[in-house]
Image (cartoon, rainbow, N blue to C red):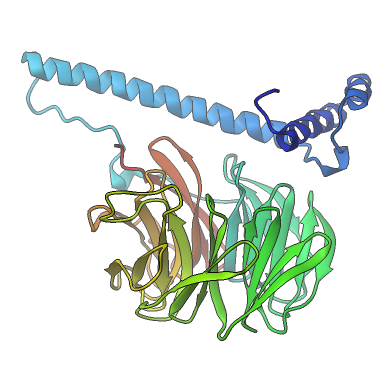
Length: 401
């Protein structure tokens, strides 16, 4: 385990111990626990199962891709030698109309207001107007858990480790650890409209204009500014916090020190994401990134991390509000969903064109959110929530090269 950090090693040991106990290997569990420094209470018994499923799916996808490459290489060589008919086509990815779509087994009884994805496993948590959260295992299409405790609509959610955090209409924030309600936090004087995981903490934003840092022990730093917080995101490499208020975006350090801002969105911003790719920038430093927003006019705007005015604008690419954004594995293809459309729209930031549009959601209108939950080489899973409480998973082709 020399290649693991201390925290990773403890998490792995805790998972092994939990698995041994869960499956009845008590002697092995007791012997292993004596040598382990991990806290068993902090583990999730199904972590090893999820890791195995994810690894198996990844291996299956890799073998399939290798077979495709081998087949297409043979076809190309045959075409060059004149031994194959010239009408043979070469394609590494499935056509856009052949993407699969599934509905998860977890269904809310109200509008899906928000969702979060786990940084390691193919888990996604959805938050609903019915006051519940459902943790979905997108890899197996099973419900991992249903979390109850809020008494009003849940507007925001974040996942980190074995923790699920959720903010509600009444201003409260609740934390579940390994599926059990751990603590309720108060501080916001209005609805908690955004939650994100930032380093070892969670950050919340609310209609009261405040941005607050939370740990299990309680509230930390506080930032106050004018205007309702409508969306937040975190740039993972720099751990910078991106906060949208109205038509403006502000950037903060992890301690909530404000370091810059962006202006020029065409309407009130409704969703945010980031990517390391910056259009038209030839020299890219390790700390540079793009900020991408969707707004209530259905438009998408792109800024540089340095702030200022937009470097790209995509007017009305979806119908209604832009309610969800996700970046595929190539770093430059953005998936956008609108609340009045039955489409997933993919936009390539490098070429400024819409590269694919999926109409597979024609039976369900009124989308409320979307995120990229997992990717296996050239195919990414995009999870979409709806106003009817359904949670859908679509596959999008990731451009190769």
